[in-house]
Image (tube, rainbow, N blue to C red):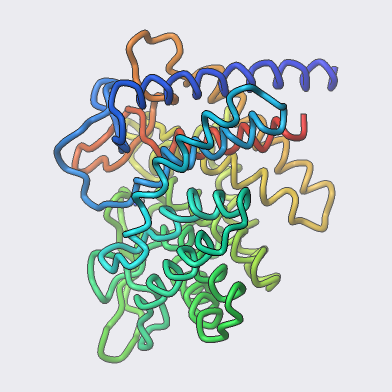
Length: 376
Ligand code: GLY
C-alpha cells in the first residue's frame, strides 16, 4: 500500500514537474527577459500595479530548480536550464544594493545562492554577501527589527524569508554584527508577530522614538488579529531557515508551532484559506501559494527535527499538500493558462492576483516537487 502511494506520488510529481517546465519554456519563448508576478484570467500581467518590487528572482529560481532536477537524473535539458537561469539571474545583480525593498532574500537566495551552489565562483558569493549587507542596513536599533518597505515603524512577517541572506553573509564573512542583526530581527519577530497558538500577524508597528512595540497590523490579511495564511507559511519556512543557521532551538520550536497551526487549521487536503480568520464566505477563497510555501517548508523542517515521528508527519503532510496541488490545482487542464498553479492570491484588498497564478506559488511548488522527487 505504502509502496503504491510512493509510486503514484512519483508519477504525479514528475508529471507536474514536466508541466512546470513546459509553462516556463513557453513563457521565455513568448516574452524573453520578462519576469512575471501574477496572472489576470490566466495571462501573465506585464503592466500595472505591483504594490512592491519583490518577485524577479522566482522565475530564474524555477530555472535553477529545473537544472538541478535534470542534472540529478542526467536529463538532456540540464544545460538548457542552466544557461537560461544564468541569463535571467545576471540582471538581478544590480539589486544587491537596492535599499527600497526588504526582499533581497527572495531575490538572491532563489538565484545567486543556487548558482553559487553549482559553480562556486567567488564573484557569485560576493553578490550574496553584498545583498546581505544591504538588507542589514534596514535594522532599527530602537525596536531591534529590519524595517519593512512601507515605513520605518513597520516590521513584516515576510522578512523572515529574507533574513537568511544576512545569516549567509555573516557566515561567509565571519561578521558578528551581521549575525547579531539577523538573530535580533528573528527574536523580535518571534516576540511580536508569532502568537501563543502558533498563528502569526502580518505586521508589527513600533514607536520609532522609544522602540516600544505598539500593535499588530496587516496589509494583506483580513484583520490585525487574524492569521493571513501566506504570512504563516513564510514564518514556518523562515524560522526553519533561521534554526538551520543559528541552531538556536527556540527558532525550531517557533517553526514547529507555526507548522502545527497551519496543519491543524487547514482542510484535510492541506490547502489553506487565504486568511484563516476571514468570514466564512470569504474563506472559500484558498491560496495555493500559501500551500506551496507550507509544503516546501514542511519538507525542509521534517529533516531538521530530532523526533523521527514528527519528522515523518511533516514529511508526509508536505507530500499530501503537493499531491493535492498536483492533482487538483495544476493549470494543465486549462489550455492557454500561462501559470503552473491556479488558485493563488496576491493582494485581496487591492484586487491584485486573486484566484490566479502567482509566480512565488509556482516557484515554491516546483521547489517542493524537486525536493520530494529527490527522495521518492
Ligand atoms: N510580499 C510578500 C507577499 O505578498 O507574500
